[in-house]
Image 1 (tube, rainbow over the protein chains, first blue to last red):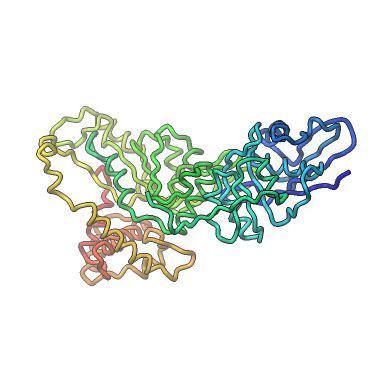
Image 2 (spheres, rainbow over the protein chains, first blue to last red):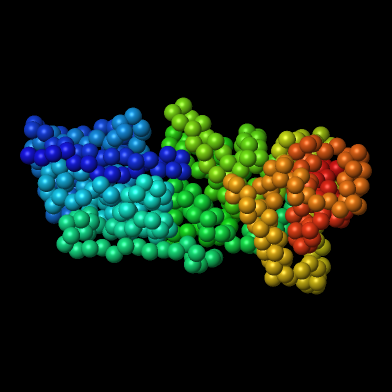
Length: 191
Length: 294
């Protein structure tokens, strides 16, 4: 039914970010949802948040699917922590289950925590991720709305603030384009 | 800063960050990245466009000050990057916390080593510390008598180790201001207005920025000079040269102390907008290094 989907995201190591590829695969079998790739508790709990967020966004969630779902966070030997992988995991699942129209994921990077109602919550380290993207020719950075201003300091990338999962899906399918965030540190108001 | 209770040590420290010049765009990105990783930025306040002022309580742990944890996060020294780290009541801090400040003070970054990985956080901050001269607070006060024993005073002052003290360039005693004088508004007569001070600092910083324009890696201020640069830019005039020789014969100064004195006198000369370091600049720098207990 489907191929393995790959979505780009990043983990913070010290001050700098490192690429993490989120892969999802659906297999025939009894329902199960596993996240592998040295995930900590907060990452493993993502499956509950992703499940509810999808359901409440009007999308068929993994729990309704009688399939074996495997999510891998590559490279698999680097520890991943925190909730910032919620959004890429949800996207990887949507692509793998073909519930989103195919889009070019190569030049895009995603981070964000999901709320149960499908909203996107702020995470830490988005400026570092934007810097990483800028250095590696990733032109589009999708971050939670609250973190967009800091990420937009880097001029070589386009930063898209994400408020809800539905907004993001609509944008990626080209139904409703989101505006990018602009910011100039030189004109930042001094306190 | 050492002085009896209630003389305005804390107030002075807070005032310091307000007279520093605003950070450059590069500095703002540096500090914002640290705050971003620490999860301290918000949509309404996306940049750290001011000089950070961090004042951790003296019960702070070494990890919270230096940074670390299983997923290493920046500590207070990094959050104070390009700003001020203020340690109020410094003798009350845990000894291991104070000693762990020695490396970042010298190098401008902390290297946090954990089993799995080693991470580096920038930590170039101005350390400001305040303490009382003794446990009761009134040692050497002209009016109120100190009730501490000599032993107690010694033990209290020993809580700050020699190596740490050697890294503090400016050590001053803050005497008590008479309350009657305050009431008469005498304080308005002393000192110069804030505006003027800010202008002087801005001029000095500009001088330093131009001085280091060709340096790589980028440095912004005199405090970041290594010994080679210090020798290069410390233009002593003849009077100062003679004074330095005599002063070094008379008092004990460590090699580090020597370079630090040169750097401080360079800065004092900058504040005077003077190309050469004059005798009075050097004398002032020497005077700031006198040990608190002496």
